[in-house]
Length: 281
Image (cartoon, rainbow, N blue to C red; front, top):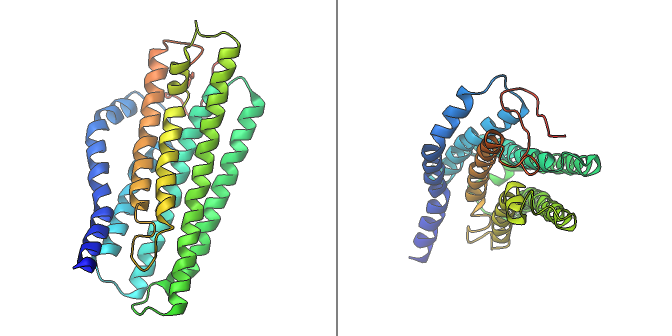
């Protein structure tokens, strides 16, 4: 009975994120249509949005397929490879959109911008490297029998995946810290009349960075659960889907901010009708 309950819980946690993605897609479809209808040439920001918006579909399908369908070792390996590639694309796109928003916040500080770009590059390289290392191990992990050797391989895979999520969590924490620092600078310069602290924190990506960071940390904690119970990394599907959802909302928020231009100091001057990202000077 306990084993049956565990299996049902695992299946639910793998399949439930599909409902979250579908609900958010329906709620924001109007924003997406309006954004693309008023957009000119595509740029890197648009590509990141499309990746974060739609690549979760193959990720969700592969995760559900692995959980619910009995597969041959070869098919299992292929499915996990699709899942791994999807994971890399989603995380890079999500962190990339977060980077774009933070770069707009620091439009007048080249040192901080270079530091942000370097941090993102390190995160991207580390993420791709960890996923690439997992590919040769998938064939050994996708076997029907459980031996000590197979358990060691699965444990190594779990550690590599945890490393991927730790990389993104560190980047998100760094973005949140830099955003708080930006707000402190505004306070020291007595800029409340131009931009209140609360507005700067929300417009300056702190809300998104902290949300992504909390989700990442919650998922990382699950990797410390026993592998034998099947709960290790059980919330990774939730994390990836929620990252994609928040990433799309980052772009929608940037677009709304660019159109409203209520505060020329706080809001980025991103031009979504062009392929180039401009910043206010």
